[in-house]
Length: 367
Image (tube, rainbow, N blue to C red; front, side, top):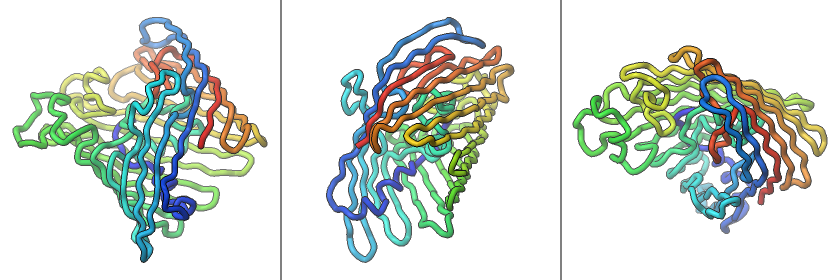
């Protein structure tokens, strides 16, 4: 899925409920279940199978957020989130988004380690979010978050909102990425050589049952020739009441030395030096509420326009049962069909990707 930037998790912090308090709010999600993955097709090398006990439908995390009223309509806000793995007792092992900012009549400005706009769009329009085995997100390559990032979120005007975001280096301290790129393309231009810079523009329309996102992003490695990547993403949904339908389409283009999802595109995707990276991702989905039950489905494809016979499609189906407003049971199933040279396998962005068939069942609780 590639590089992108700020999460609309900002919206949760800037909600009216959050503004009503000046103290720190502790929030989180705990998801535990069982998962089974097996089978192969396409160019996968073997038929492995694996049982797991782990988060299966959503990311377990804990966070601390708050808002302070500074007067005259100005407020300070912050959110510090940490990913947890309850099955392995690794505690606050990995940071989620981390930011501080100001909000008022002008909009909201935040800076820190920000969730990706494109990653958020996939989660927003995918019926399963981003972490289920039935989500297409596990077949795409992305930075879930970007370091050294700043974002501006405009006020809503007649349903329209604009997000502008940039990062001086998406993956770590500035000047730390020289080794990630081909030295043959390097220009000796000083201390910021290697910085993976990002610019994102996101236009959102949300009014009534209709929601639309248009996002354009570009990244480049400072001091390297031909290390650029471009992505354009469009997502939409319409809630008919009895059923909510959604879909997404995006285009990713880059060079063999461009960073995509933390990897140089060439080695990660079998490209030769100077070869262009060109991929299309799309999915359609639907969710149907049935009282305490809900059922959902998704069908999507990753289409590789650079390598031949390397496409793959994925089918996901699932169900939820609400035990309360905060606790639900889930069951998700997914199947991947690779073309002759395709190597996609089941994953949930947490565990190892294994097999082309997957089943996950469990319980999640939010607080």
